[in-house]
Length: 305
Image (cartoon, rainbow, N blue to C red; front, side, top):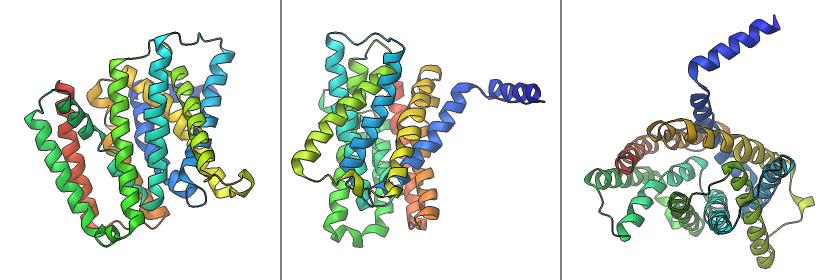
């Protein structure tokens, strides 16, 4: 009986394909991490949560590859890893975790998905022309964001909401710079090991910042709900989903592997409305669809180049 079940499961996986299953995992579970972050920052500082998450995730990755006697990076590889640890984890992940404290998890996920627009703008200032399709996509996405914010007009009068928007926007810009840096100076050794090193280095940087600013709370004062959130973010968000993400990138065409960008915000919005009773109005739904349609055009333009 056990053999039959294993054969049936194996047959299903082979029919669908492991890379597609990995992409489905990324599309859903990275959307759920917004809710885990939202729950965690209710009871503790966002930068401290990001620090602990990255420290634990980095220890798991690096510990595994030390056990496997994986060769360490050499020379200029360290420069790339340090730069990416600052851009992708200390800044992007740290700021987005901090920013979601002041807004709904769904809105945070939508704003974070706008990073392809910043890639186009950064390339423009580096002397590359903006394709007509990309410009159209940017305008459509901007229109979608305007529709979404119809229901947040009153919140714009709140300094905390304004601060959250600034943090979330800054996180998307640093993520865009991180993607361009990765493309320019790809690390030519195990990407999973590199990921763990980036997490560890960023955790050290964040710890220095949070300790110097005095915002950390004692570990004994972190409630159980936040520890559950951290555990979920480490195991699901930082380990399993990143592994699935890199695997899907390595085994699927870019056109398919980038689908997660459009699904993550939808997952965060829908689950946020059920779990946290976040408002999900008609304007927010329409605005999200319009924004993601614009992002599709921007991504398509990037892929053509």
